[in-house]
Length: 225
Ligand code: CA
Image (cartoon, rainbow, N blue to C red):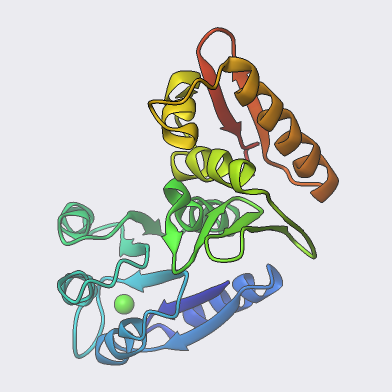
């Protein structure tokens, strides 16, 4: 996980960097908006923590230009208490969340985690939900240091669940998207693959599990951080 911190108050920037590094995030610090934009445009970060009041280019302009350049890295904006209006404009400009200074480091980390697992977003060739990463090219499912290769159907079912991690996916939808509309696959087929996947998730020791909503379908269960 790589985090870009753009904050002109150096002591705060360094404190933020330290908080991130304690969580084993790799943090880069920059101290003005122009550098912030240059670094962020590289697209190599998983999340950007961006102050609003910055020299050279303010945070609102940075996020606006990033979004214009189609860089969709999640942005957490930091605002001072007397810059309430900035929160609203920050979100209008394409920020994903904001925090008011001073803030609690636990809350900051919770928000960073929430942003980085946002909607199981496709990050390059991977789909990530909490501690799980599914490679869309190799079908490898990885949790920390463990990894397993999924079969085609397992992969297709899990990909569907990880693409909308907050939604309950109806069984019929799983059948039609994995087996095809014309197939004669039945609920049992889905159940069999869900049970394979559950065994693999438990083998990997993931925090994520597959929940059942009786007579409806399945969804991912992700415990609160
Ligand atoms: Ca500032």
